[in-house]
View (cartoon, rainbow, N blue to C red):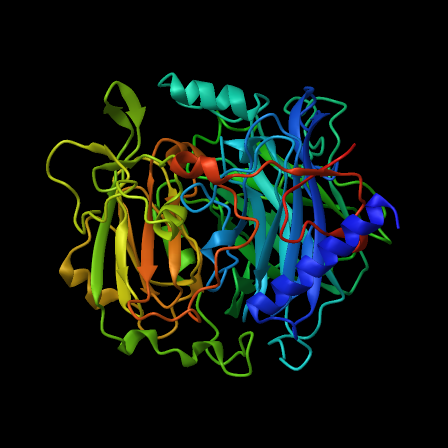
Length: 584
C-alpha cells in the first residue's frame, strides 16, 4: 500500500477513536474540507485582496442536521494565524472548538487543523467567520444551516426552497489596512458599500452605482414560498433588509422559532441572523429589488452605501427599475426600531430540536444568582493606545489561551476579577474574566453609552432577551421584563443611550466569549470571557481536550511539528486527530 493509503487508514482509525472518545459513535458524521486563502476580487469594482474558502467568496454553506457530528478540516493558506468561529453554534461541552483567541491557539500559516463538534439539540440559521486580526472584514465567512430531524415537526409548511443571504458593510481596504487604521488611533470611517452574497449593488441608479459591478440575482418560481436565511456578517453597520412588494414573515432567529409576524422590512444588526418565509405572490411584471441599507446614519451622506440584489421570477417580464423601496421613516422616532425588536417573540408552543416545546424552559421563574451590568463608552486612550472598554476594562488577550492555561494549571494568565458593576476609577487594560456559577442563572445588563448601535454575542449559549429601553438601567427596570416569551438568541443589539437585559442559564461548562460583535469595538478590547467550571469531578460535563490541540504562549514547547503528507482525504473532510500539512 502506498504512502497516501497508509496516511488515510491512519486518519480513519484516529477519527473512529475520536468518535468513541466523544461518545458520539451513533450520531451521523458530516465532513467538510476548508482551504482558506487569499484571492483577488472586485465586489465594488475595485480589485482587492479577499479571503476565500475553497476559492469562493463567500464560503460554502455548512448544511447539517441537529445532533450531527461535524468535522471541518481547515487548511490555513493565509500569511497569518487563523481561527474559524461558528457563530451561534453552542458547542455543548466543548469550548475547545469555539475558535476564538481566549480558548484556542491560532492555526499557523500553512498548517492544517480539524474542528470537531456536535450541533447538539440545535436547529436554525447561523454563520461562520474568521475571528482573528479583523479578518472578517476581508471575508472568510459563510452560512450554517442546522435542520430538524424528520421526527421533529417545524411550525410552518415545508418551504419550496431554502436560500442563504449574507449581507454586510464593506471596505475596499483589506483587513490589514483597516487594522492599521485602528492601531493608529483612527476611526474606520464610512464603508464603501454593502455587499449581498459577496457582490455589489445592482445598477438601480446610474449616478450612484458605476457600471461593471456584478450583482446578486436570486431566481424563484412564481407562487412558491421560500425560506430566506439572512445574516449580517459585516463590520459595524446595522442594516435594514427588505424586498420590494413582498412581505417578510419572520419564522426563526439564531436557533429559536418565533411567533410568525409580517414585516415589510426588518433591522438586522451586526452578527444577527433571521429566517423569513417569503411567498412569491406578485405578478412578475418586472424583477424586484432586494435591499440592505444602512441604519442610524445620515442617509444623504451614506446614499452610496446600499446593497441591492435582484429577485427574479422565472416568468418575469422585465428588469427591475425605478426608485428603491423606502426604508423606515423614523428619523424623528428613535423608538421605531426598538419597538420592532420588542415585537419579536419566542414561539413557546413550537417544538425545538428535541420533542418538547422550545418554551418549556420557564426562564421567568428561575432565581437569578449573579448580576453583571456591563457599560460601554466611546473609545478612549489607555496607556497611549486608543481602546474600547466594558465597565472600565479593556480586555487584553493572553498569549496562552484561558482554557489551555486551566488545563495545564498555568498561573497568572488571567484574573477572575471582572467587576459586576462599572468601575468608578480610571479604565484598565486587563485580562479579567467573569467567574460564572455552574448551573447558576446570570442576569447581564448591557448599557450602551456610545453613539452607535452595538451588538453583543455570547458564545456557547442562547440568551433570553427580556428587556430593552432608553435611558440608564436601574433595579426598577426589572418591572418591564418579559418573563414569558422573550426570544432566545445568541446576538443582541443595544441602542445608543439605551440598555438591553439578558438572562443566561449557565449549564454549559467551558470558557465562553462575551463580546461586542462590531469588529472595531471587539478589536479595541470590548470583550471578556465567562468561565464556568463544574465544582464536582465529573468528566461527563465537558469533552476532554482534543488530541490535536494546538499549543502557544507559555506552552509553546509542547507543540509538535506537523506531519507532511501527500494524502488526499476522502469524503470532503479529514484531519482526524492530527495536524497535517498537505502538499499542493
